[in-house]
Length: 223
Ligand SMILES: [Ca+2]
Ligand SMILES: [Ca+2]
Ligand SMILES: [Ca+2]
Image 1 (cartoon, helix red, strand yellow):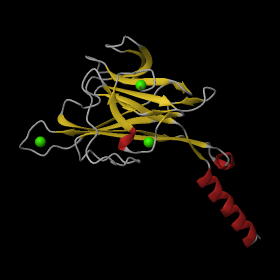
Image 2 (image 1 turned 90 degrees about the vertical axis):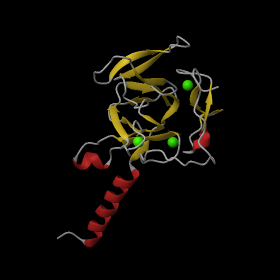
Image 3 (image 1 turned 45 degrees about the vertical axis):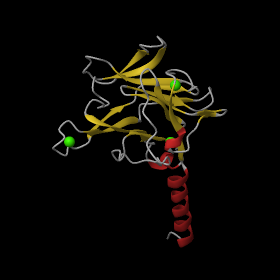
Image 4 (image 1 turned 45 degrees about the horizontal axis):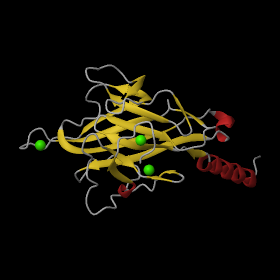
């Protein structure tokens, strides 16, 4: 016969295992241009992150016909490859490409800098749909093994959000507070929207004031 005490102990252990074993990894969005999004792994160089459990989600306001209310554009892509701490990865549209996301090198047309990346289909970010308002999120949680091993498995999670352009922006979930009285102005090419950088790395207070238009720095910290 199982004692109530043992049942309670097992219950507590289960709760601890379920609640305490997800580790948030330091993957953040750090730069944006309409068809190019930079990610940065804000962790020590000794750390690596398998990106395959995670994805990027996009929602964009659509307003091609001023007389009709149009639904938000929505898309998403699974991330590919691995990153080490302190490295960058650029997700970019390629003109004329319509295939699935693939690992590919991004070459910046302005600075000629090359950065490891993921190429996505032309139109993926939905910027040319007349809405001038976009929401981006990278998120996901790894799946652990089943059975007893699952109790002691540390799951890895990623979650970061950037909302841009005119308000209101499409809902995309996650944590992002519009703490500025008006939208942070969009960059004028060749400038980009960059996350502010502090001595310890990119700011991540989940607020709009972490962002500002500035020099183009794909593959490097914002300046
Ligand atoms: Ca419309
Ligand atoms: Ca964040
Ligand atoms: Ca950058």
